[in-house]
Amino acid sequence: MASAESFPPSSLQADNLIHVFWDEGILKHDTGTGVFDTGMDPGFLDVLEKHPENADRVKNMLSILKRGPISPFISWHHGRPALISELLSFHTQEYVNELIEADRNGWKEICGGTFLNPGSWDAALVAAGTALSAMKHISDGHGKIAYALVRPPGHHAQPTQADGYCFLNNAGLAVQLALDSGCRKVAVLDIDVHYGNGTAEGFYRSDKVLTISLHMNHGSWGPSHPQSGTVDELGEGEGFGYNLNIPLPNGTGDKGYGYAVQHLVVPAIEKFEPDMLVLVVGQDSSAESWKLLIGALRRVIYQEKSSQSLYYEGNPITCNAV
Image (cartoon, rainbow, N blue to C red; front, side, top):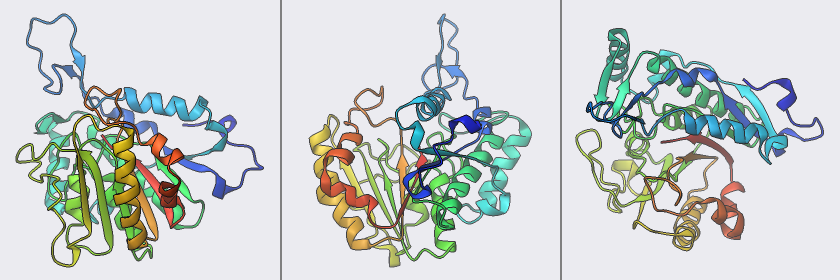
């Protein structure tokens, strides 16, 4: 947890701070080593690689927030484990029971590359609860921007199944809490390199949540990820037209990303007029990532004047993704 010395000067008002929610309990999720995400040792390698979803990225982000240039503008807050009852606002009881049983048994590969190891369930509960705490902080009027630094990630987790290293949909739970707390409409912008299929699935039939995902054009990858992330997945019933997919070709740079944000994302959010914006910040969508080939959004946010309107309407809250 952050110490008192890391808190910002008292002269800074709460509205001007980034309220960061963190709990060391998320580090209990140990994804192990192997070949890529298989968790397997073929027996002829001297050095096995860490699972791609490991704690290093979160640890580095934590150090950046504590010691980096924006550290004076951060207010630190403790996370907490989510209650089982809170999970049911997004996930089904049957699915939650499956995860609880897997934890009791000590180990289970829930789906390809997604391992529930000893400590993983506790970490998943802390990640979900920390995201909920961040949303409650903003919903209660204690600031404008909150950031939940959490793992295991969540945006692939659907109401009834795990997917893509994700067990519980942290962002989806936060969105539902915002609605339950009085928000009329919530917009979700997912900038992870992969389609935020779990969040989209959870609100696919709702006109109260606009889900937008910028991702590489990877399509479906099996039974745990049947959604394709293509432009024709628009929602169903009352939610038709409230799911916006923006699949980008591999190699898309800052200009292409900026064009998509300026001409597709911003107009959609402005037209929707949400009370709250949830930004799902995957850490694998920069050109420096081993997985991806899409330029970072950071320069777009700071250099494209129009995209700053994302922060004019409503209250942003950010959650980590894969």
